[in-house]
Amino acid sequence: MGRISARIAAVAESATLAIDAKAKALKAAGEDVVGFGAGEPDFPTPAHIVDAAVEACRDPKTHKYTPTSGLPELRSAIAAKTARDSGLAIEAAQVLVTNGGKQAIYNAFATLLDPGDEVIVPAPFWTTYPEAIALAGGVSVYIDTDESTGFRATLDQLEAARTPRTKVLLFVSPSNPTGAVYGRDEIEAIGQWAAEHELWVLTDEIYEHLVYGDATHHSLPVVVPELADRCVVVNGVAKTYAMTGWRVGWMLGPLDVVKAATNLQSHATSNVANVSQRAALAAVAGDLTAVAEMREAFDRRRQLIVKMLNEIPGVSCVEPEGAFYAFPSFKAVLGREIKGRTPSTTLELAEIILDEARVAIVPGEAFGAPGYARLSYALGDEDLERGVRRIGDLLA
Ligand SMILES: Cc1ncc(COP(=O)(O)O)c(C=O)c1O
Image 1 (cartoon, helix red, strand yellow):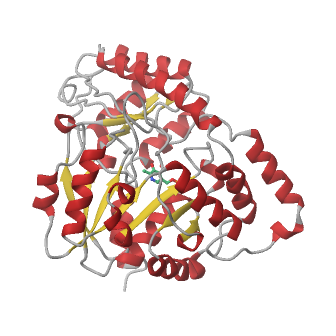
Image 2: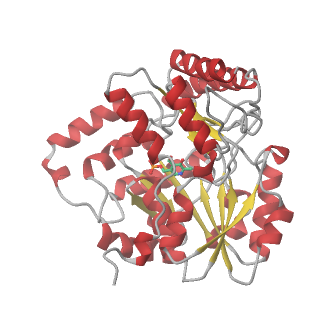
Image 3: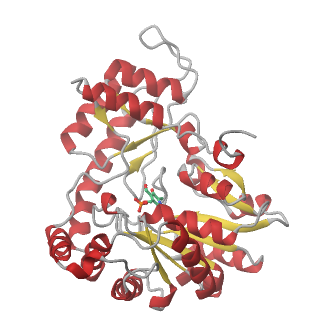
């Protein structure tokens, strides 16, 4: 009998961890490191949200548990916000407030999957999904996407991945790490395909408000209403309101799924911190001014980072249409000598870039896409320019 259960021992160490730990250690030692790793806005949480939390802290009512599923007024406000922002009509009872979007993903897969059930996971994917699927006993079936389709999965690819064991399609738009945004027609075709084959869809809409240029976010169960009874939507306040540290997300879905997931959460973590829920209430009940301002800054940085990356020999980057990540290819850099070292993987390249240029990027291996790397552009304009210039100087 092992000291660690087989189930938990199989959880992969995050491929980002080593480089992140190294970057932090260098920073702590006083080194000037530019970090493109963090998936969080560099803005503070808007003042009216912080004020609501301060007020909540002083109110003894807030010092108590809330129902596991969340404060009733927050669940209602999330239902109203969902109708306002994506056009999806749901009742408050269909909302489970979770510790970030991350717990919503964990809860959803744990609630939907039996051992051996398959989930179609388009790659590049955010690192958490395969682990949440595996912890639920599910099996990830990957589809590779690349620049040729703007990192969007095609219907043919989905159909080729479907088997009698397929239960869920994971659908993420805008995507972390690629910034890909699916068009309405593509969503309609994918949704109808899922409905036809009676698949479930977990759709992660956490970047719904961060779309640029002509891109528009469409919610899958709105475009294909017949899927609503087999669709779980994940969302949260982290990215929209610069609230990553407050840990408030939610899942929306059919009543039976939400009820079962609430039972799970009641034994795992109970309610999300009451004060954080009050802050989230102020966020979702308020307007979208703050996110409009952040979006403007992100859009400017997006254009700058894509332009600068494409000027580096051997680096090519398609323009992301959403979220706040650039996902350039470094394939033409691999095998080249850089300061006496010859990287054959982006994992090695990221290490060299950190060692030699003091810039932290996340290698594509973390997202099931070797040859690429993710750079978050949710950092200050000056840091962004400085960081990419350093990579350019190193690879010139
Ligand atoms: C696609 C996606 N979904 C969900 C999350 C979870 O966010 P949180 O748990 O901070 O709400 C993230 C965070 O990076 C993300 O990128």
